[in-house]
Length: 237
Image 1 (cartoon, rainbow, N blue to C red):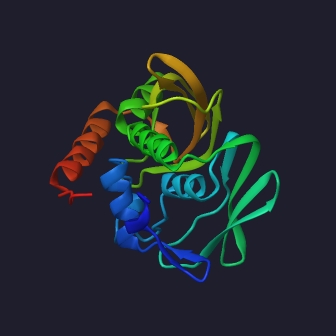
Image 2: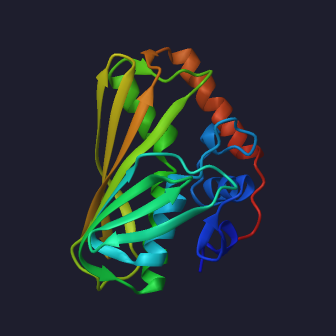
């Protein structure tokens, strides 16, 4: 179980500590979003960790739509329940935080599930700055450098077949819709295997606190982000 070191489980309840959530984001996803820093005031458990956990426990259905309606806080009990044949819910503090609509046959081969999750997490970690910055610049907007807010809203993944090996994720297209100080970003991807498209998906992000694009401010934000990454010392996984 490749998630074993990032999850605590007891009597059917799950917990993720700040250290575990931060390590997952930084070590697996190469994601240095400030919301996943150990000392972040509004620390949240990474959505990619929740996706991977659900996939590992329930398999990957032919089609899965994840809606991240609330945050899972560190060191807080949460559960994963399949409420009916088509819905999986993560519940924490009496509230549904993640809802997953599922349909079709289910992939249960754990090694392939792990490969897909690892590849998705790797792909997802490239969102900033590689994908987001050109999108924002195209609309002459940017997030607040002093308080960059990028929230994971939802994700869809669909598989055309279950018999494949060595999956990789490739960017298909990306788009942004700006409405005042808010921006909706959709990143479309294909699941590839040996040159064949075996699945597809979409990641939906919400940007808030948008302001006019400033090259110097964005360059500084990217530089600080990259410096944080280079100063982080990864431990062997």
